[in-house]
Length: 213
Image 1 (tube, rainbow, N blue to C red):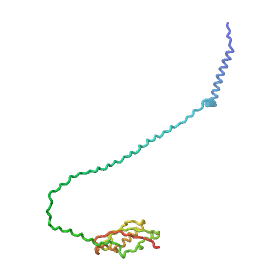
Image 2 (spheres, rainbow, N blue to C red; image 1 turned 60 degrees about the vertical axis):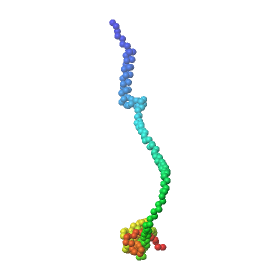
Image 3 (tube, helix red, strand yellow; image 1 turned 90 degrees about the vertical axis):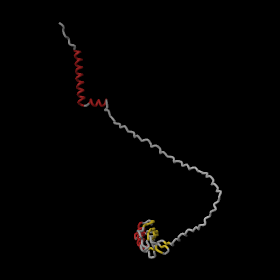
Image 4 (cartoon, one colour; image 1 turned 90 degrees about the horizontal axis):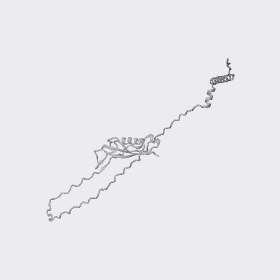
């Protein structure tokens, strides 16, 4: 009868391997529970950092404009001188002997030009100082304005006077217009041969505003 002999050395090796496997599992569970495995992974493989790089878009500049085209001015060619050769006039063989005896009257003499005198301010014309603007006097404004007026045969203005040349100051121009208007009826009308001209006569005269010293 054969006896079964246990191999104690084989059992001992199997027990050591089994205990090592159990210890390894326990260590893995303990590492997972305490976060040791996550820290080990982070040490061995650090986290990947991603950076977003924005690509700069290059600005496309438009091409430069073409240089301006200069048009050459047309060249003017002067017309050529044309010389026409005229044939000589034929000479008359017979002379004209018929002479008229009709009396030719002389043209009448041109009419004499009348002695005309244009219209002008009269002797009783208003005084310039009476129409000197007070604001201009306070500011010391001085100047001369040329006024255009049309005067009828009665010495009155036929239309509102206007400024022909400004004095440089609106106040002085306004005073000159008032003075020319107030002189209506005090102008000397235009005359021809000493008689008043029936039509209005227009002229320009100067009104000067000067401060008294």
